[in-house]
Length: 269
Image (cartoon, rainbow, N blue to C red):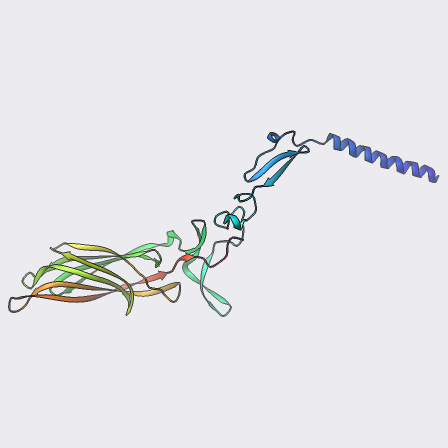
């Protein structure tokens, strides 16, 4: 009885083995040569033992390996480098364990790098016009700036136009010597000009950069323009006298300053 059971078990094992050989022999072969295999970007595909074998190519965006030697990061090759993400609002300060996020600043990909920037869709231009009278001259002043104003890249557009003057008291030209952009008593930027306005309707247009570095990367501030000028006036004796003076114009609209640049986070991991 025992011998019969052994024979049955042995027969069963042999049959399983034979069936496995038959199935292996009947298994579909993936390829006979390389052209039978589907190619894939950044992978070297070969046919080995009737199977398609794919080997990642080095320093190639798309090989599913984030390679620091190839300067790959989440911005330059997101298909390989998944983390950390270059997105979300930028924290401008911390209070205890709580992060305070900026109104405009966020992490963005630019030129294959993760930077602190502003979404272009959120930027609006603010044009301001004001009129002032100085030394018997009527002037129109204009400033145009972006909100938010990127201290790294933006410039304020300043225009000064001579609207009218008292010819019996003033002799042209009016020479604009210097323009200062200020926030209260703080100098934000300065532009030497030295340009003449020789007639009514004449004007200048200058692009003034700001080199001010705020304490925080986002800051709302007042806007004041100080202009230094030179003009010839006729005094009570009928004599010409060169006047060098300045005037200050404070605008009611405030500026919102931001500082952009490369992010302080490591992204090529």
